[in-house]
Length: 308
Image 1 (cartoon, helix red, strand yellow):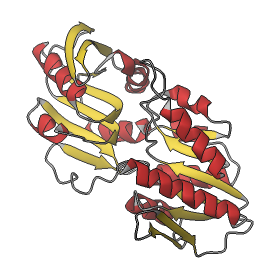
Image 2 (cartoon, rainbow, N blue to C red):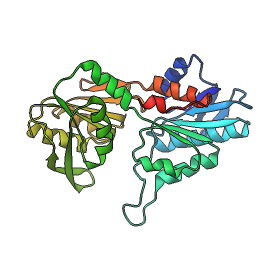
Image 3 (spheres, one colour):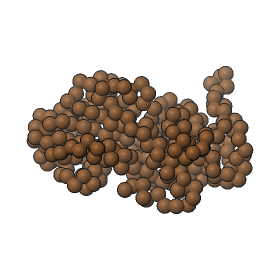
């Protein structure tokens, strides 16, 4: 077995390798003078079980192309099996035709990975679960929820509920509520524009209670901040949020800092070096989880244990 990394999240890749008591494989991943991606695998991979870790976060196109080029190079170098380890799967929000004449880019990326030569994919908290069906190769889908649950249990919080920031987050919120054995609240929102929302109704009771809002990602932060203000107006006490993928695009950080949210917890599926020292942002590592999953895949063992 050997583990390689592209340039998108080298810190996470090194942490995964360290958890597995191994070093990252030797590969050059850079650019030609004109900007095209240049890849050379320096280690012999003939007959090996190869894993390539690369988040397709910003710059999404460069990182995706790096991954595709690395997979192609490994295939042509006679690797026995190639597993694309994608902590954050970019383009996942374009998973259906919600308007006329738009692409289903999540499916396109799945096709590109397969054609490039990936035999398997390992990822975490896809924006939509049905993306798993876009692949004609095996896909293992990890959840960051156990990492978040362990973190909040250490806080020994009392009198709290789990809430969604919108209807779409109910399934994940139920997962948290069942494991904490607490009640669930739901914020029903009405979107008034591409980046503007108006919360309309609250299903459940948050008055006098602390609130944890889980979700798969935070981008501009508009939905989360609006939901937090709405919950605060309904009598909620301290409000926490846990999001697997912290994109923090646009004015997201400023919105969070000016909001009633006490803490936003994210993981390192996307590099967070420039945010980990911010007052309201906490970064947890999923390196141990990915290391265990990679080891289990290599040894042909089940990974269902990692969901507990």
